[in-house]
Image 1 (tube, helix red, strand yellow):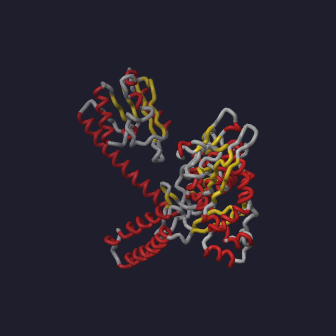
Image 2: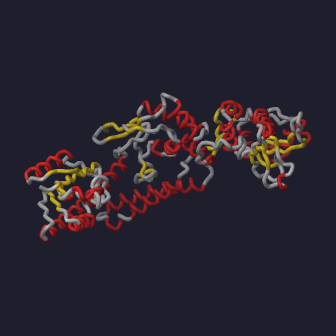
Length: 524
């Protein structure tokens, strides 16, 4: 009586007619009829035949020096349950012989003890490899067809959607009401320029939005990387995507797969906000409240935060200017002064965001369209009749028009515009914490410079000279929206007016908007 290792495998690439249990029954029946005992099972479910037997999760551990001590005969239903690759199969045959083991394939009558048996096994292994290649080609072709027709290809549906039967056969994606509520909330927060980490933390703290299970699997909640993947996924535009890129039809247009969850305009807006901020994890507890905002008055370098024993003694200093002597600025005074400037100078200024009329990945789409053109053109030499050639030329003409449109989108800035979000800096400022306020200023390109004029004493605070630097493009965009400058200190208003060119001043006056102050205009 020999010790039997039962080998059972089912591939994830096919819908096998012989189940795991059926394979077990056949092996148990063979062992019983031949008077052998099954001592172990090497069961690999959802493992492709292209995987080497030595790398298979279950079988691999029995093909080691230690694992091979517990069995004498390996029994499988068919040879392709061991592998579908001739090289891997012959490697297994060699290992079987070198380690004085036996191999039995019930359906194929394999006997490796004779040269005829080894020859037959080699032929069957080659056939199995060919079947795998053909099967892989058929699956790939089928997946391409599903992508081109906009049908759901299977697998996990994007968050916010679920698979449903499609009229006429196949599957399609439809919106999941519960997940859509969470998804739309994520989009809303992203449009407010909140970071991935902030969105994830809020979701995890909200019992209704917390995600402990997804697609039948337990999760550890929301993560910043998950939020980033959702916000950058073009599938939410309703497009069919492959490897992160939109699938194009013969006209070079994205193939529609389902109802979109976000408009192209809002998607572009989110990409613009994310590109300014980059991927940012949780803010370091040691990060300065004004990191990336406050700069040295003299040299323009960022000021660095210096923590002291007492909070009121924290300061900002420049590591570049004159060995930092006398260049430290009291942090509390600087931060309080910035709060005043934001409220007084730009508090009523509407938050304007740059939006683009085409997807930021226009260059990628252009390359996809060019690839489509080349692929269609490659068929010209094999077309048998005039009618087919005419069809191909029409497709090439359509794709060429698409290429020209994308080339204009890539090289033109005409699609850029400033849009009023309906929220002022003052309103958003009140809603945010220190980190949120810092991100609001950095994303808008607003800088703050300061220097100490009179040093503080034990009883008095230092006196600072400060300036809030608003990007010129934001100022100009605000003026085109008819924004009236708030009442600010005379010197600040006069400095702003003097910074304008003659053309800008005249354009301001011709527009009929209120002047910054007649006295400043006269002085200018």
